[in-house]
Amino acid sequence: MRQNTSIGATSVALMRELNAQVTDLPRPEHHRIVKPLGNLVLPTLDVDEPTIGFTVPDWLRRRSRTIVDNLLRTGVRVVGDPAELEPVDSAGTSPDDVDTDARLEMALAALGALLREDAVQPWRRADYNRRAAQAEQAAQRGTKTQ
Image 1 (cartoon, rainbow, N blue to C red):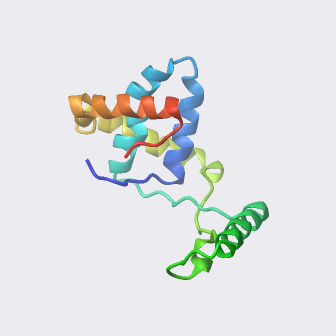
Image 2: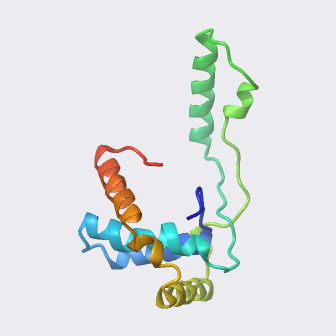
């Protein structure tokens, strides 16, 4: 399995819709059944999708500036340019702007991958189940897993 994979705007839109459809699933079942779609299947699909864009809101720019200023006032040695700690806008598309045809194409590609089972195999392994359990425990603690 590739490390640090990411999904684009179409995959995010699809996962949002899917999650809205399965709100009745208990959290452990969601982590076991739904989460692998976003973590293992969608990143491997050969579907062209736009990257996710982000415009940094003013409140975040102000908060970031305050944090950097406070850091600099402590007198600690900062290696590098403190300006690099400030958030930057990222070009791309909002998942809210992905059209229905693109979401359908992504959903069909994911379904095809699942039916072929080439994307399903990793999550059947004990290793994936172990990581899913760790992710669930981390979610309960409010931390992230690697």
